[in-house]
Image (cartoon, rainbow, N blue to C red; front, side, top):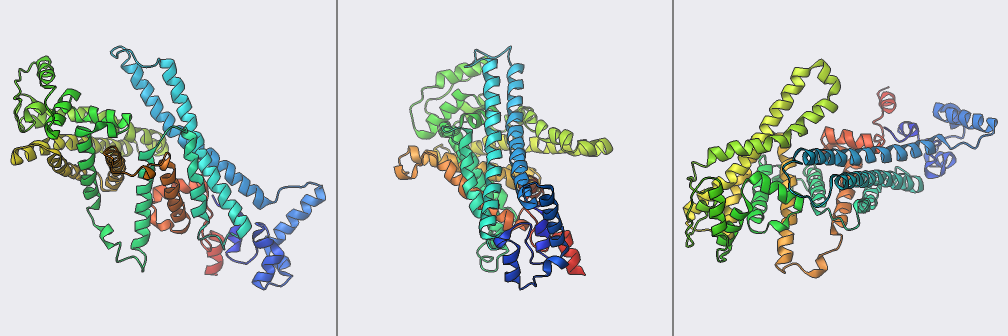
Length: 496
């Protein structure tokens, strides 16, 4: 969606009478050295002149067409931003509520009732809708105001940077006390990727950014992230948000009492959970006697099974746990986004969705299985367990990302890197190594605003660094006008 039709004409002639840029038509005539009779020869000016005459003849003080188009762009962007925010958060909330109802018979007394859970879900949906709606509306407003005051052409190189920066604090609408550090860091990682792509194609910084073109850089990032995430999962799980912590506990498939025993062994603390671990295995039908002088945690992690023998049973259970995660991720877009193609090519689209689901499920189950496999292997080789060995043993787990589709690897790696960075700084802060002055109350908003400034600047000025699917979504929401001489009318005139 373009900003207004007048900018398509501005590429071909210097006229800006509809937009009022640079003070209106008469100023532009002086700037472009056009004759005063230009409005008689320019069909665009003739249409505007006729439109102005018709409005005044009817006695209406109508809003100029360009201004009405700007207002329309603002309203549409806000509405689309709201729909995306409410749709995403509402969809997640819906799945959460359905899962809550499904386990209603077996669950224990919850902290709040079903009605309260639905009320919270509705409030969160509206908050996230307002967040993205306000972000889109603020960006468009600032973009249009700066363009109107300073001229769209003169401010083109920095206007979107400022607009993205000022739109960032809209994150506060999700709740003044709600911090979104993981989201902010993830957006920062996305901004860094875009900036690196700009650097790679730059003549000045191309050589410096050449290492970023490494083919398997996504897998290396995943290995780094895995080392931090899985080490913190074992040694400091409170460094993660509750929702992500629950995700790790569920999919890593080990009871909390087992993790506590591994933590005590790795950190050199006296054992306090050995009896509880033995009782846990008794409930599973396994009689295990744990040695208080053990050096490696294999007997804690898989009881009476050998390190090799526990791999296949664990993998099967991990695959069953992972399948429900990816079914909605692949099937819902197939039913909603590709609904028209689904009627024409049902087997092709559903087949791709099923294959994608199976592949992603294989990745997650391989990832969690290899985490324990590598841990056991490193422990057997070194003959001991401590914090550095935990970090070293969990590093190769990231190799499981090679199972995933290439286009999805960087997305998963960046998401995990954001979680790893958040966990790392929480661990550093709790250890007292982070100065109090650096612990901002809403540092997530600062990071998010800085990141969106970079992203929106790249969107306006370096569009080729975006993948087409992301660019299409941004165009759909923000409706940035096409760059000069890229409109169909301008291209036709240049070709002539």
